[in-house]
Length: 133
Image 1 (cartoon, rainbow, N blue to C red):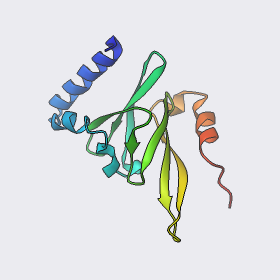
Image 2: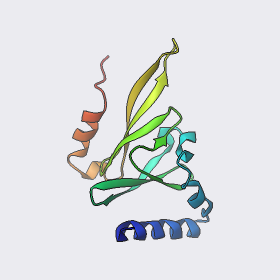
Image 3: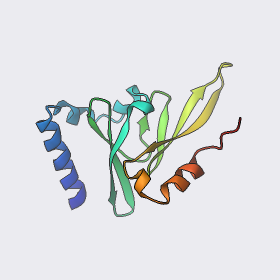
Image 4: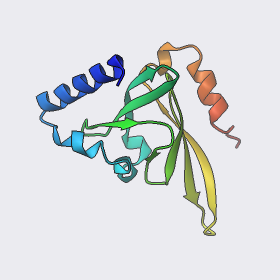
């Protein structure tokens, strides 16, 4: 385990113990734990780069932290994380329309660094579909 990832894991575990949320450490090991939350109820707490790979710690409304990587599921609409970078998480969800057909919808969960990075708005705009009236 790389040092940066180990230190962040220790920091997160200590923070959970201090805040009285140690049980979330067990919940974060469940790869489907984040599927019970609406994406709007989640926030990116931290993005960690481990060489070429990036992963995120995502917090729910109660402050529980979950480890998230590309390919993992989150959200109630069968969302799958397609990309993790310093700007946030690029997600594809499956939404059922009124005729019962399934449509893909792109979503983006912003990181706390989003407004500080110049290229993040461009990355999000490139990921999300253009909205027309």
